[in-house]
Length: 284
Image (cartoon, rainbow, N blue to C red; front, side):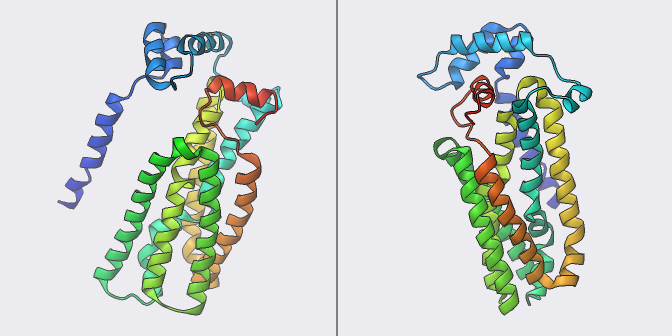
């Protein structure tokens, strides 16, 4: 039954994917300009001109061909280099603050905090998962109204505060309930910004010719960092204790704050072409 229940979320996601329209850029590449115009009319804000946006997409797709790996190593202009480096950095910093350690090792952390009951360990783990889910739901509601950059900045600040609080709490007491609350608080703020918005920014910053390979580099950096954090957490816990482990993540998160506040531009309400023009002009 447990394994069978896990079938429902993928089925729901599959149904949702089937209802999504194709990308206007893909439709233009497939020479389906009328369908591309229809999608633009459905997705652009009322004040935008779908025909003008379509003309610009057609022009860009005629000029751009997918970059090879050799071209990726020798990009001629700084805006292109910048978005590739931003993509890799976004993938890295999202995981460097230890979110996977919280997800994977919640039972271990709570047991070390003095919670011995299996049912309470399960409850604590479930609550962390619920906090993550609710944070992502709230993010989906806020991301267009508040903006990508503001959510990332807010999330990174409060993730840092949460990590500091977790570290101090583990150093001063073994109150399992306080630790459950703080872990849920951390996961909530992570899921409101750093979790989902990272992927939105990565996809919106990249021009078509760089998107496939740059996204693969960003995902590689993300998964590599995730693996390192997950594999090193227990050793870090043994060497420095839970307080020291989360204190280290807090220090890393402080460094990440500078990246999010200084390097990540706002992409809300802008087409890919507008973002690229702004980057080329140095306005982002």
